[in-house]
Image (cartoon, rainbow over all chains, first blue to last red; front, side, top):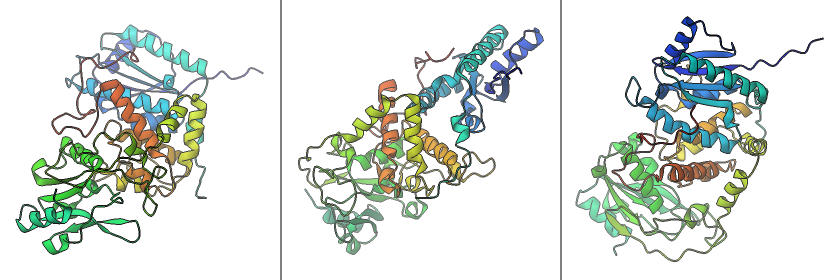
Length: 148
Length: 287
């Protein structure tokens, strides 16, 4: 019997103005990329609360892709600068807690970079495939611990 | 130097402030927080080795806000949290009269003798034993007892672990959590009127004390204090399950220092870390 290949579940949090439009360009240009990502559109990378990323892992995501406008291109002027600072701190915290930083991928993809979007997605999906499933967070599931 | 009673009485009788938040004697080797509103009440205030509570937590409470201008008795670390509250526009500098206390260190908890073994980890590398910002000053700083910084040693130990070991270490620690939110209540910087765990639609963080909810809560609590925590360690002291929250807080404080050369609570005119940005922030990790 053929063993089932591991297909990672990846959640992508992207900004409305750049990466989402970039993904749209990839689509209208008939470029193909791996179908493992579920995309969630937000107004700005500054809107991506780290709690979203935690929630994705809680619900069993194997990887999280975060992407938005290049620095200086933000539709709201400074949203991505604030986001960048937040990610630096968040990354360090995850690392300290033992969550593999490479499960989260950050990128800047502009509206005209359909090709880059395809490369980013394929690269990240392959990386997560090689790493295997990320289960430890989702496995914490409903084990009650009221025992003192 | 005037003692605390003289200062407080003067402030209250002259009408400069409407209340003084300070400490009064509790039972053996303890103090308790006290709000004095008249000069007679101010007679009860004390300063001793056991002024542990960070009273800055009261400044953002509605019950205290109603007094208008208040004076507050604060050690150096407590003053850092007052400054952080001013930096974050939660209180106004002109509404708070800071009675700084020259601090000789404090023990880890109430009810124990104060010596080299029981000194709180936060005191060992303290830069503000003589307060950096104050309106009145009281108390006398004695030499600190010498002690090893075991807290920092544990941080270094965890940093050296593999990802799996780190995860197991923290999973076990967070496992103890009973979700009482004492850490949040004791924290002067956790002033949100509605905490993220209290929001039920959508439910971001599961509230029951199971492993997953515990992990997410402690992770998010630490993140919300990243670059803001001034290290008063009140959360850890308040924790009934002895979760080493200071490891996370201190690690994130060290990160803020390394990455951005930022220390919260030092200057009221410095913008906060996450409330500002620099065009040259590191982006090596972004593709």
